[in-house]
Image 1 (cartoon, rainbow, N blue to C red):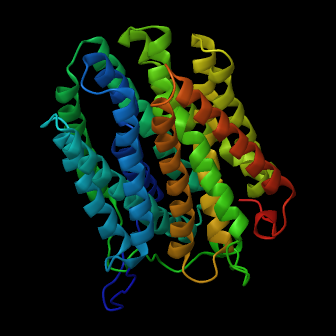
Image 2 (image 1 turned 90 degrees about the vertical axis):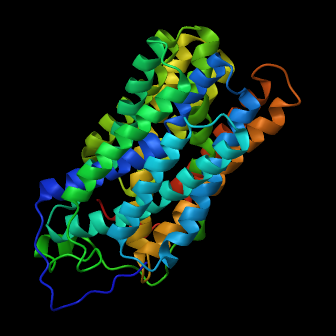
Length: 407
């Protein structure tokens, strides 16, 4: 990722509001629509007969495979973080709208793959430029606003799909409408994003920002941290993909089952905004461990007993922890990065992408050998075990130096 700058061109200092809003909207579009609009859409597509659960798993896996490719390639792109983000958002607009132009499964797979690549590019590039600007503006705690964009995007897209589904809007038309919403958001991000003259760099850091962003330790990024982040991806992705489908199995009414996903997104957004208080009391590593435990419980509840209550509880537990865990993991990686933070964030995102790609693939393979939700339930149980094992390492493992700092 290029960060070259022309020192002869002055860089205007953006406002905290502009930086925070641009970052929040970028992640809302990338994750709320590019990544996770498929979750409420899958339940509606199943109801309309457009696809089945097994094909839905492969479509999800294609998106997560694209996310992995995006994570591995972001640092190699010869563009500034801002330009990468804008180009990737344009891909999300087109790939989302194109889902409504065809009913071909192979084309859908390509489109979901492209949206996954673009989503990773947006997440990593936005984390780089937005966190840098926030630190240099003396507002590092604004990271909570940035990552609240994930939950906000999920909630807004989920609400839109929920109401559209209740109004019997056809899935193909709904994909086109989501593409139009993405285009509007893209225009706002482009207008608010800081100037690209310094390739994501910002004015000189204030003393407050410098004190908050500690120098990276020479040991680099612990391998165990990368693996645990991969377990996070594996554990959260199944409820994040199939919660509305499970809700539909309880009540086959889009006005009811469609509520599961907005609840998930609202929990994610609120938890991220409240994370500042948690970060002041707990280390990032301990917060990650606690999030893993709560998420494991959210995975297990529908397996133990499928009901409206357990689906709602799973939405709150997983939705209320996965963005906080993502934020803590990204900041832990940035603190432990020796050199280029983009590469450290790329490693973490790649591990996360591998985990979340394995989840729906495992579910799809198992679903061909079991009846009903048997395969999905086995995969959910495996995800819970992985999360609990990861929590143990995070709480008691070695190499905890970076996380001693509070965020």
